[in-house]
Image 1: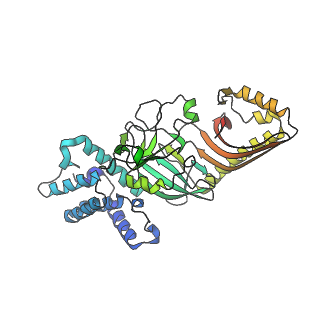
Image 2: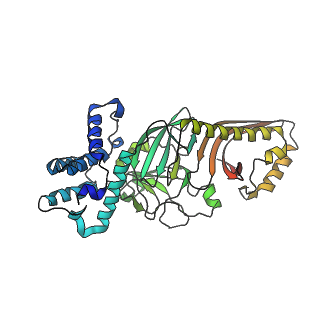
Image 3: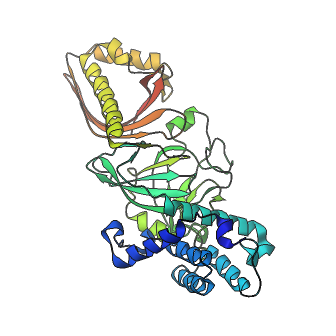
Amino acid sequence: MSILQQLRPVRQLRRHAATLAFLVCSGSAALAAPARVSDIGPEPQLAGTLAAISQGDFTKALQQVDALIAAFPNFRLAYLIRGDLLLAQTKPLTSFGEGGKNELAKVADLHDEAVARLRALQEKPQGTALQRYLLQMEKEQKFAIVIDTRKSRLYLYKNDAGTPRFVADYYVTQGKLGAAKTAEGDKRTPIGVYHVTSSLSRKTLGDFYGSGAYPINYPNEWDRRMGRKDHGIWLHGTPSNTYSRPPKASDGCVVLANLDLDAIAGDLQIGLTPVIISDSIEWLSHDDWQAERSALLAMIDSWREDWESRDIGKYASHYSGQFLADGINTQQWIEQKRKVNASKNWIKVDVRNISMFRNPGKEEYVVVTFEQDYKSNNLSNATKKRQYWAKEDGHWKIIYEGTL
């Protein structure tokens, strides 16, 4: 059985690899040459190498894999394929990675990486379909990140007047035991809606983390409600002697090649950039995405209007019976508002710069962040708020609310 058959990268790869090579070299509008090398990554060259193998042209394949190694000197998968090609000159190969069969676990990891990279190459986002989770980006959020753990892929989106537009995608590593983190030390990557909270430079980290690290706010408010623990979930790079790691190799962090991390580093904004981690991306047509976004915006506006009305019953209808914030439950929250409203002749609430991100997991919640201007006859203040809206008996209710 050939290397290509072991990898199972689909027969269309031959034609696909040739098309990619032509488009990248010619600068075709269908695939304009990116400004950054890492926007291409090793996948097209990897595909070209495997296509040459499938055609029985081992000389060409060896030339291409040597070019791949020259471009990405620490890319271990390329060395494994090169070893197989050299071995094939002396005897028939019966399996992928035969040149490294004395380290079968590492060969299996590289096999998984090859499959993940090639599948991603074939399944790049196309057309006008939008990811369901990026419902609205506020004007200051320049980019958003969505990670598909099933495909070992990070997708970068640009904010186009509130609408996310696909920019690039990158191979990533997740936890050794997969996704859906629940406990400390479980070697899993969390699923949910997070934000970049800080930046750690290479100087403050050991070589293991590569060119830097970007912690995210795991556990978020929802995770804490669910009793999920642990900390220190980061986006970070790889050791200097490693180009990339296997699809499942971290203790829960999301790991990128240093070249890829450097490529997105300038797009990450502390406290602003959303990082949505999913185990399976759900796509919507533009019309369905717009309908869902509009419905949620109307829901938020209804909450705002009912607060302004000073009708405590209407206001309370927007809050879940499971509401909890800073130790205050639903009844205490509403009673507190009732006392405050007693001194008000009028209330005016302005909500702007709204971002809305839907949880990609089975738990239905939306993270809403906005700037709030509150005015009344005896008080005026401005705050930034974050709310978690959860589905309850078919209706969206606020389950958490707090200031940032």
